[in-house]
Length: 494
Image (cartoon, rainbow, N blue to C red; front, top):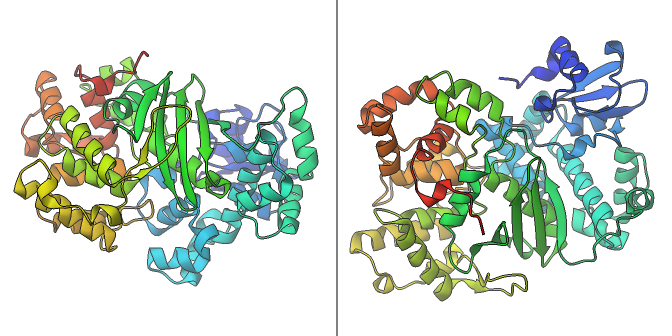
């Protein structure tokens, strides 16, 4: 693991000198002679080792007085993979900060969600990342501001408000400190020949660590799309987003070196959160090299990894939504699960307008589903009870499935509900909680793949065999699923 890489100066120097993009997001390099900080893959001539200083986060580099490099734009690197595979309080805090909790609720709100005091949270983040929650949130606001400045024609006052700044003065000062340019100069620098968009749809690039195999990632999302909420249209996966200040529509297209993202938001204050949730859904902050290196040590998985390296885990933008959909999918086909979900959307979802496609609703919130009549559900009584119990628990806040949740506590609370067995719990853990080690040995697709590959096919024996795939068993699931001919494995062609 590379969690303390910034403390290994020799290793960091080698990565910078090699311009190794695999380490982008793992650490940042401050150059004392220029006062800038860069990503490891910066195309500029590497500085002398004695002039390099290494930091675990962009916020830490900014706090040390360095400004962002104009060439490599280190503020736009993929996020650290650490926050993907760790379940400790620092990782949970970072996921919540990325989801905008500090901007909406302040540090006390962050601490409350994590069950710690503000002093404890600040101490732990400073110890590991060299910056506290306010500085980390400030760095994120600066990145959002830059995106809006460079890609829209919004007045600067609107940009400041949308990026989460409390005042124009704080916005101006932060942009100057981080980018060594005024907001106006930053816009002028990129505007020549590229007129910015108006206040409608925003187009941006979502970076990732190569390789990335889009087939199962977009194929899974498209094949399981809920009518009215999700669709595949014109080479893009499109879906509606329920956001803190309004709603939005995201269109995501796989490209060789990035994911093209178009966002249409009713309130630009939700931009940072919308980006974060799209990245989370597509698992774009993963470290595919680390995952694949471990999985290919198994001679059974090695050919699967070699055939299509860089598989990601398709996740969700809304954890409660996915939990409901997991229950709807118990012991039925993908098509039946989509039908059940579509009926709930039509009956209880919030309608929206989608000028660019066929999306019609937001998926119903738990509070709306709490009003449903169980007798209206066209499936067995036991599953009706499972669904209504889950919805009530979510609506009353008894279960936290959000990005900052405690994975094991969430599992335990789900297990206490009627009708929640290992398949449902681990499916939610894999795709909603984001646990990279979630494993579903009882899944029919996994059992079929195991049999075809001469792996143990009973759940207990397969679980023992899969121990060598830890902590990346959720990724092993993707490789095993991909051996079948189900539509989830195929990138749509239309």
